[in-house]
Every structure is written in structure tokens, then in C-alpha cells.
Picture (tube, rainbow, N blue to C red):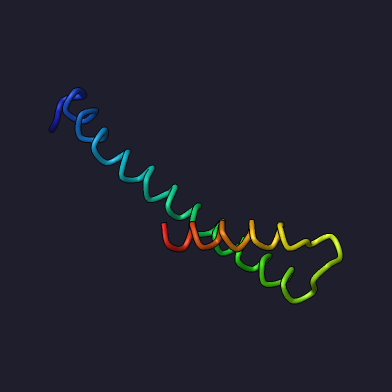
Length: 67
């Protein structure tokens, strides 16, 4: 049975990977939600949705998808 120090040392290697996986899952979900909102805004085109806002949303989506 590993000592407490060995257990801590081993868990310190798995925790960062778990944290990264969780962050990646959150980023994927946020990207998908932003994409859905972008499509709705493009489809319905409310009067407050200006060209500048459209360009900002589009460039953010490109960054998230390609970055």
C-alpha cells in the first residue's frame, strides 16, 4: 500500500489532466452555445444586432473553432 506522500504525489499528476479535461469540456459547451446563439441572431436579425456585433461574434467563433 502506498504511503500518504506517495498517494499525494500520484494524485498530483492526475488532477491537472482532470482539470484540463473539465476546462476543455466547458469550452466546448460554451462554443456550442455561442454558435447556437449566433445562428439565431443571424436568422432573426433583431434591429439591435449591428454589423459590428455580428463581426465580433463571428470572429470569436472562428477563434474558438480554430484556436
